[in-house]
Length: 133
Image (cartoon, rainbow, N blue to C red):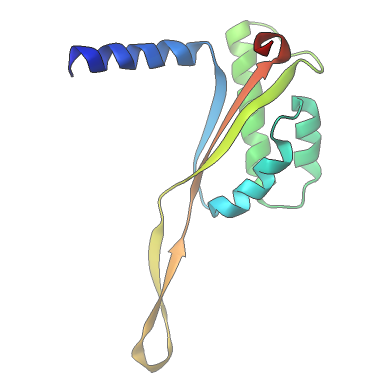
């Protein structure tokens, strides 16, 4: 690894130490379905987002709720204290496309239809309002 690349990698690593996030990788649902749920909670206060996710009927909401709890735990671990009500907010949350498994389904007249089983990666950042201002 070159010197410039190594310095850039160290800067990125140091920047991540001051941010509080969690990643959920290779979730076996399409990114489009996950984005519906993610759009519900973007920018919300953490406790309100947990309530929204708990009563959402989409299957992807259980995965996002688990991810949000993990991000809160990461924040509490790095700050060595419990999060208070109304303190934490979801600053950034996004869904990226993961690996697509390609399968074949039998079709009439000896043909085969291709089935794409999509997956996604979700990244969630939390922070306090005071740090943003």
